[in-house]
Image (cartoon, rainbow, N blue to C red):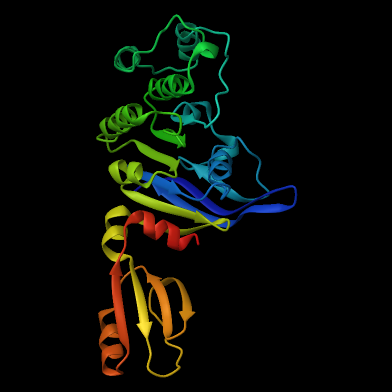
Length: 288
C-alpha cells in the first residue's frame, strides 16, 4: 500500500508542557482511521501538526511523499480539513462562501454541493454567523467534500451534530470511501461512530500512538486477562499492552492471546481468566 501520511519523531510542546513525544505514525492510502484520545490528549495538536497548521518542535512529517511544510499547490488541493472551530468568514452568506472557496480549486463538484445542501437543508441565503453550530459544521463538511479530495482530515466532525446529522455525515463518508483512493483521518471520542466507518483505530495517550491496528483485529484479538497465582511469582504476559499487579497475581490487556503461553500456565496450575472487550473498554483501559 502507498503511505499517504508519514510521521517520524514528532515532538510538540506548549509553554514547556510536552504534548506529543517522539510520535511515529503512518497512514496508508484507502484507510479510514479513527483517532481516539481523551480530552487534552493532543488529538487536535497532532492533526494540525500533520497539516502544518501548527509548528512542531522536532520530527519529520510527509504527505503524499512531500514534506508537509513544503507541499506543492497541487498536493494541497488534494487535502481537505474540517477543524473543531469555525474559522470561515462569518459575514458571508453560505452561497457566497461556497462560491468564494470554489475559486481556489481546479476540481469542484457542484453536484455534490447541491446534493448535500438539499439533503442537509442548508439555507444558502443565511449568513454563516446566523447558523446554528450544527449547521455550521454541515457547511464546513460540504466545503471539505466539494473539491473531491484524496485526503480528508476531520477533527471531531460530529461533535456539533445531532444524531440525525451524525448519521448523514457517516453515511456520506461511507459513500466516499467506496473509492479506494480516498484516505480519511478523523478524531473522535464517540467509539460507536468509529466502529461504523473506520477500518483502523489509533489511540493517542501520553504523547504517543499507544495502539494502532485494524479495527476488526482489535475487536477480535484484544482481551483482558486476570492471572491468579497460588504462590507469589512474577509472570511475563506475552503481547501485553497494559498491565498491573493485584493481590493474587496480575491483570493485563493483551493485543492477542498466546496459546502456547496459556498451555504453559495451565501446566503450572496458574489460573488465567479471559474476558472479551468492546472498543470503548479497550480505549478506557489503554488510556487509564
